Image (cartoon, rainbow, N blue to C red; front, side, top):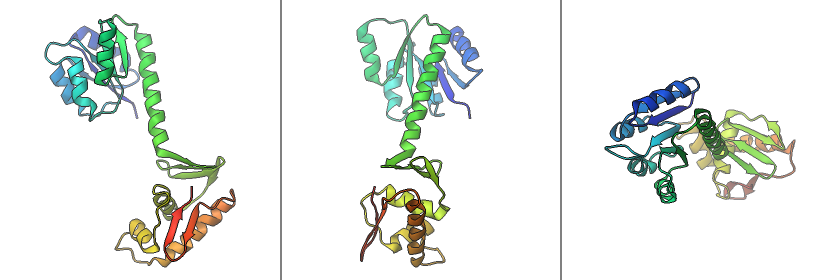
Length: 223
């Protein structure tokens, strides 16, 4: 899926030039004033190229209004060169500051760099490391020292529940209801069998016991 870029500038020539350049690689949204920019920002772009000097709402105002709701990189485009202007831009929530006139290839490289950084950050949020064990919650995969561990859907669901609440004790009934739902047609005894299988699969790659039994209470993640 292509990344989505929002280009905001009140000079149609600049917008058309950037749209033509970036349209070869990205999905491009355009806006020619501040009010239109606010509407287009609701389409969740992956990056915003935002002109500061616009007649109705300037870029600083737009950035302040959307920053609490949009986390994507915002790159200011401006002819301003005073350090105080840069400080105001970063304070408003900008991630970068591109001076006009700019080289399109350099701008393209900066855009690509910000998108790569954003992708890494999002991926890192989906992956957690527990010593030698790595869990990718997005891909629903587990590996130990880079060796993949094959878990069934329910087994992964149990690992996900426990590992995302590390240290918290879950009894069998709570685990069962969280994963199978209150209308599940089995019973909580199946949790014991699933955890036995998880431990067996992990023990083939590590001596560490990632799921502890808390006798009389249930199970907890031991990361």
